[in-house]
Length: 89
Image 1 (spheres, rainbow, N blue to C red):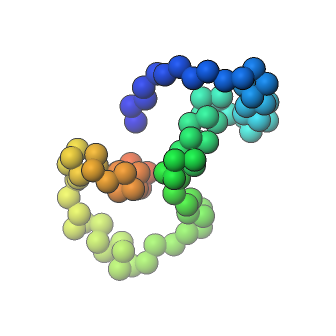
Image 2 (cartoon, helix red, strand yellow):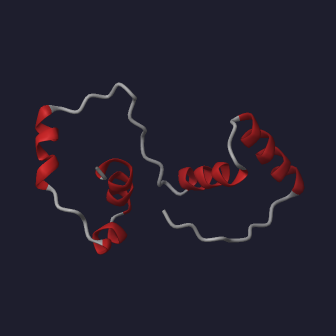
């Protein structure tokens, strides 16, 4: 997924806390901030448990959906998220 570099100004004490939490979670500061922004912007989708079983009916649909166009992905953030996470073989 493409990323765009940006500059954000933070209070020094906030950046220090972010660095501590990111380090404690064994993550980069960038990853931590990106996840926090996604959650705050309402783009975080529930994570499926590792033992999640997909029904046979859903699996049967696998061959019926064509590759989405860029326009389809650009127009539907939830679909784009799900396609990028689960839709690619």
